[in-house]
Picture 1: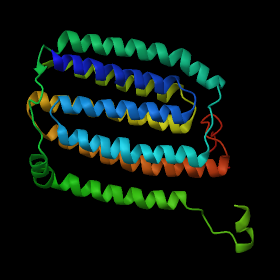
Picture 2: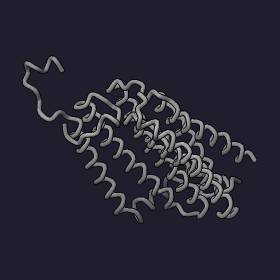
Picture 3: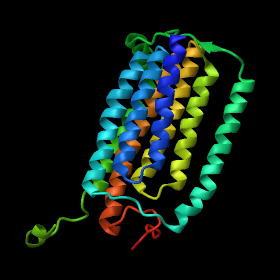
Picture 4: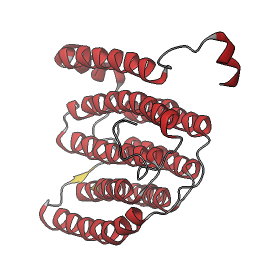
Length: 174
Length: 100
């Protein structure tokens, strides 16, 4: 019962944060509500017994990636988004579509996917077991992801750097 | 004991919110955050199925998704900075040309 209560509370926080992300006009408010979503998802992972995933969620997602987002928002001095014709059409068609889709998905899941329940801490994912899986069974995908992240680093550096350095006289204006 | 479909419904709601944000938001950074929301919805269903079927590989896949999300965030934010440098705007409606 306690587990269901915890699931409901943090699931409600999660959904409220996601909806708030859609409502807010300023990107920094959206970023903060996304951090709330990520933190409550970490609690859901803890309820599922995935302690290591929860820790990585907080450290990598709510820590590193969101810092990157907030840093970019502040670097670009992003203000409130303005409404345009395209966005109004998207609201008219997007929100009813989202509602209908969610209701259909929820109905199908609750109706047809059985009554299997997940006991809390059913599958303790200690780091040692995950490491054995990651470095033994999934060694090749792990190496491929390291190559991927190396390429991403190089791409980010190339994209964010200026194409050519201006002569020293003009450097003061930039 | 929390039924498995509850987790799946929560993950579906998060994914739907991400899709909606992708559709209705006009700020390119917020669109990016909606994509992160979708990835997190998928991650939740991965972990829920891992716990349901006693297979830890689901949790390993969450790490791969996180790596892809991190790489995507790094490259995407660099692209956003490059776009802002040439267009001086973050509104996707005004970014309608591949080349200036």
